[in-house]
Image 1 (cartoon, one colour):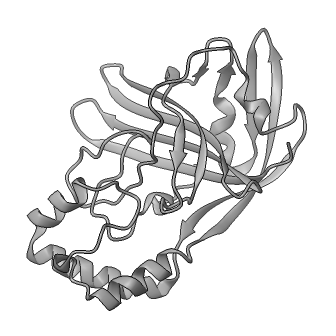
Image 2 (cartoon, rainbow, N blue to C red):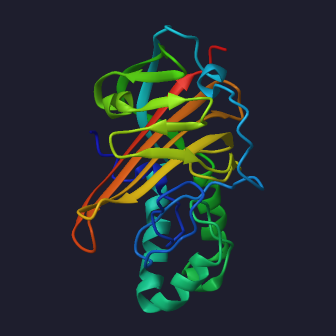
Length: 256
């Protein structure tokens, strides 16, 4: 699996941690950066709707790209100032980051280590972030019969092909277990991926040897031109060694 090194999750000026789900609260120690998309009030009722067909036509191969969303390199000098300030007062920075939504700029505060002019320039650069394509893939939705569907993804996106979607149960099945439906995603324009909305499913389990967290999300950007297909798998030895955290973000054109 292609490792994204969490670039797609990076929220500048946020010391909040990488999280297990688009809806999870920041729980880990501050040191990593993460995104949390805004969630609607409750998990939608199961009406048997096939959400894959909101984005793809059955049997049609769609060209898409795995990539990351990054701001211009010029933003790094402001990030360096924030990091220097965080070293001087790490506890305050942890608390301030935890009190604000991760994955988007923190509100201005003099303890961030930036002047107001610096902060304004940072916000300007944050608004110029763009999707950077890293690998071409092809996506095809397949009807396997008996309420079982597959999302075939070529190349580096192949791990997604192992999932099976069951609309009537409103769940996905992976080799690790069953992914159940979470609250709908409704991210605003300041999130790392910009404004987008969609659906998400999650598995979390421990078989006594390996602890796994697995997420699958799909949605549409507010511009109506592209959608996102997101997959993430985190694993560690039960009660101990961290094994891996692999993320795939795919942007595809909306053809429906």
